[in-house]
Length: 203
Image (cartoon, rainbow, N blue to C red):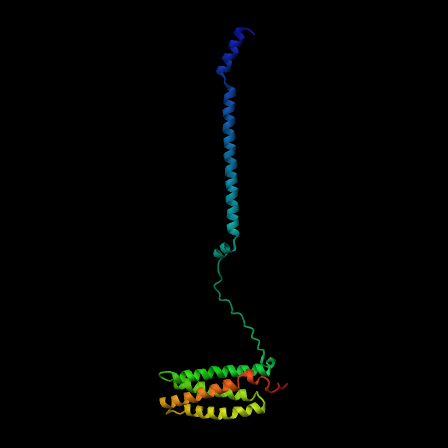
């Protein structure tokens, strides 16, 4: 190759540097394509997030029009079952004994109050007497005979408590009588003491 031809080729390369421009354009195009991919991925992520939020039940419920008409109340289903038939004689006695013990304690507390409440005293006395009578019906005749003097004494106390002229002095006397009677009942008529002397359950 002659020196003149080499010089002409070098001058053309300097005057028209196409390879350098092609590299620059290629870099710009790759950067633009990378940006487009990033935007597409970002848009897809936002779309998925919005779809997830719109699909939430709470979000839909928040923007759903509520029915202003009142809904009818559900009809309750009431089913009564008599469990008393499944109770044994011992279960019945224990139940009445526990209720008697409650009302008897209530009566004692009412009598010990600084300002006794006549209504509370009368109610507790009546209920305790009724439970004691129910206990007597569940035991054999031999044990029922032990209930008789207690019931007579308790009926006299109940009559005394129902008087309108009941005084604080009378309250102290009655309270001592009840304490003595309560100790006797717990000692002799506790359900463990009479569990073998209960009447058989009638069919």
